Amino acid sequence: MVERSRVRFSASERAELWERWRGGQCIADIARALERRNKSGVYRILATEGGIAPRPRRRAAGALRLEEREEISRGIAAGQSIRQIARVLGRAPSTVSRELNRHGGREAYRASDADSVAWDRARRPKCCRLARHPRLRWRVAQKLALQWSPPQISGWLRRAFPADQTMQLSHETIYKSLFVQARGVLKKELVAHLRTRRQMRQAKSGTLKNGLGSIVDAVSIRERPAEAEDRAVPGHWEGDLLSGANNTHIATLVERHTRFAMLIKVDGKDTATVVDALAKHVRRLPAQLRRSLTWDRGKEMADHKRFTLATDVKVYFCDPRSPWQRGSNENTNGLLRQYFPKGKDLSSYPQAYLDKIAKRLNQRPRQTLGFECPADRLRAVLQ
Image (cartoon, rainbow, N blue to C red; front, side, top):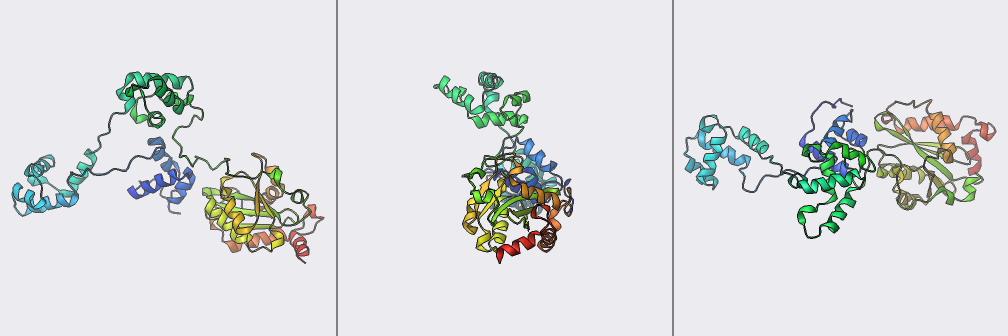
């Protein structure tokens, strides 16, 4: 990967960064998608805006456009008067006159430089609501110090001052004033009174880290069939992601009855990518080996319903922070570290190599199987 951590972000890259942030991607995933080896650049942009995507800048409808400035430049070169140039543009002569006076006059005028200066000059941020109303600012700071949440403060203000619009504001405005310190209206220390103590606003569907989280309609491992618990019947699998450097991963599946392992290349940790890769491999299995899959609480299986629809394999989720509930998978992942050590970028391994390692692992005698190989045990099951 090309080292781009010190290269500035272009306008299109910044737009993609914010789009991915709003979509719920973590900082590491965004940095990888933008081919940034160091995620600090992404974090710096997000932190500067408090995690709140800035409104896209637009030119005012009446502002001169670059092509109009180029027409002014050509008119000057042709020796035209201000009125002649204005007539061609369909503008008032005073507009052309002011444009020339702002940018060096007829002798020094350059269209591209003038357009760039005008674009920068157009940044005229409005004074925020809390800065304009000291009494409101004092009330908000007081309630934050009492560990009230911004939604609670906003709701209380509407009830306490129903007829006074100057004493009302949205909870998002409070978050902006806390996280965007450039506003300078609320002390940074007040962030410590928030329940999460985050330093920036999170996307509603996202999180800074791909850690544990709620999964819609997740079915607990406690509802898994008894035949899966006692390993008596083949076809019940345990799954997880083996992680490497630069936010790279390999999906691992282990069959509970035979300890047979499959390694699956995944191009990302997002649920769409992981579910597609898993479903493609699981569909190749015979029906008797497609009964259930037990996964941890990682959000990469948030789209478990689509996986079940594609494979007829029901997904069960472990309790939080309970890796022993996927003991076979955890043990296999430990064995795989012999071939994929920690700190290694896993994106460089093709699927053919993963199949080779899985075959080597499946032909290894296992003490838990009476020193029989998983491949032999699976072959006997399928006969």
